Image (cartoon, rainbow, N blue to C red; front, side, top):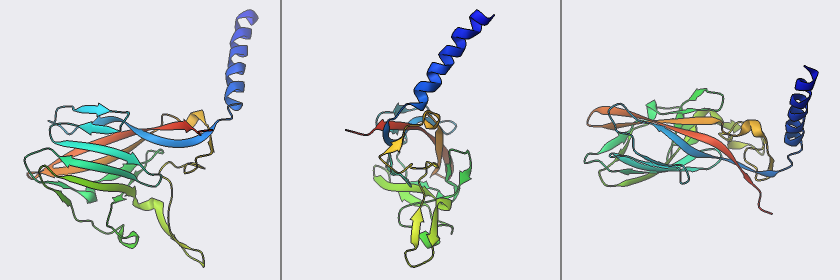
Amino acid sequence: MKRILLPIFLALSIVCFAQKNDKRKGSYSIYLCSVDNPKGIETGKLDTTLSMYEDSLIKIDWDYAVSQIGFVLTNRSDETMKIIWDEAAFISLSNETHRVFHKGIKYIDRENPQSPTLVYKGTTLSDLVSPTSFTRYVAGRYGGWTSEPILEFKQADSNKAPFREELIDKIIRVILPIKINEKTLEYGFNFKTTFKDKEK
């Protein structure tokens, strides 16, 4: 029995030692890893390298920006579509649901009702989503509005952050309801965390 357990113990020790001595520095980011399609909409094309998704109705490119996620949405349908912001949501690493605000909304108004955004057929919209609860006002002489990183861990906004294996491949989500002809289609965009080594 001891002869069997000893190699296992040694292997585990080597793995733990290697992880503790991983001195890499770099930055954390996210990429689009999957999409939950609305009911009745055929699954489209997903490009995880470009964080891009397209189907018969939309094409959307995502771009991570520390405290928000930007996107460029193209309406490929034959009708005007609306983004229903008051029903949109950001689901954090801790699996908590947060209300979002978007481009053009003042920080002080971020918790108020937001009008839908119209995207006419064949046109493109450049916008963003940011969780309202991650933005706050700091009082004092050097205070002001500040937004926390959507990846909720220390040095998430640094390009010299230490590598931590337990922070890789974690999921955050954006729920984006799109209304066409009085029918609301709920898209769920799922993102995985990743790490990029700092260039030397």
